[in-house]
Length: 245
Ligand SMILES: C[S@@+](CC[C@H](N)C(=O)[O-])C[C@H]1O[C@@H](n2cnc3c(N)ncnc32)[C@H](O)[C@@H]1O
Image: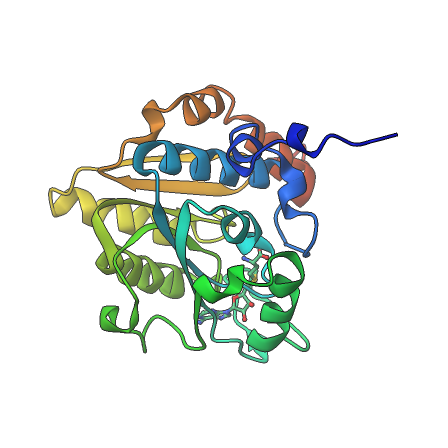
């Protein structure tokens, strides 16, 4: 049987359809719902801007980079990862990432887009050591998934905010772990009179939109009316409520 390759869906169509198989080649510690939400954000930003730039803090194996690597509309990717042997965490446990290295991540990413990796800048440091001048350009979309402590989340947000173009979107993973940092960040934005929209998307994604207004895009609107699903998934992940509470 002959396969008609012209029928293969384009990357634009796959992102818009929230095709989570875009994450299949490399492991990522995100849930299927997280991946759908991340693709919805990606679709909405590219619908707004056409070409756009993406920065993430916390890349590990490269799993969350995959859709951006494959999408020609994403013109530059910045991957920031300090790659410590042991990672602090607000849940009170430390996490280890054995063999964690930028070279291993790039090897993984080369397997899915050999030439695409040319658009990636890697910085093995944390946001306290970073300067905006180290970036190749202003950023449109930032993902924060590094050290899951409140202090790191606030610091990472401050760096991403300074790296943004005139408007942009910053989104967090594992938002239920760093909820106090999110509370502080929103209070600071409000006190500074900075207009924003903020909301959670299933499972654990928290979006802070600084002037791009992607909640008006169909791909996000659809999710917003169903964002309670994130709470069911979190209950399944962390266990049910004790009947005594
Ligand atoms: C949860 S993993 C990232 C997973 C990745 N986003 C994905 O979905 O495939 C967290 C990463 O954050 C990195 N990290 C830990 N502390 C950091 C810090 N202070 N600054 C930047 N990155 C850090 C770790 O090295 C690790 O690779």
